[in-house]
Image 1 (cartoon, one colour):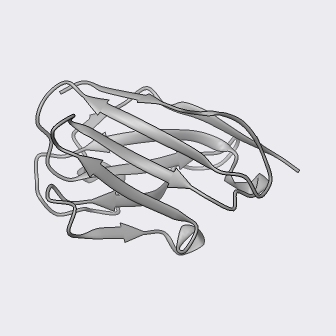
Image 2: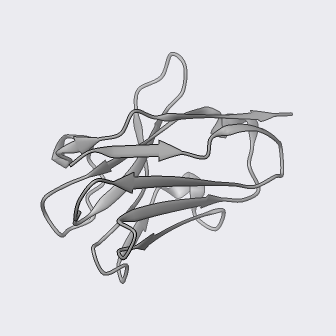
Image 3: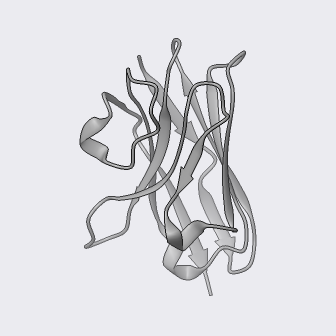
Length: 120
């Protein structure tokens, strides 16, 4: 499975952005991670195949929402109330299992990343 992330860019603090991740084939659980300069990669959000179960990192709860459209093999990350500390490269990932895991090592496929920069 190949993943193609898109939607990144420059946005002002308090603004919104929607990321998309298109998969080349069927996927099961999918997730978004991010990595800021000089920091380790961290979990952002994950969703199961049906979209009925999702998980979020504490720092994005209430601001970000993950969703998916299986007819398009695409997962989305709607980001609202963006902060400068949200600046990072955002990566989508998928795994062969159904559980939306929070640990990157449990994902089998990764996209190339899309840069999100939030200006203050």
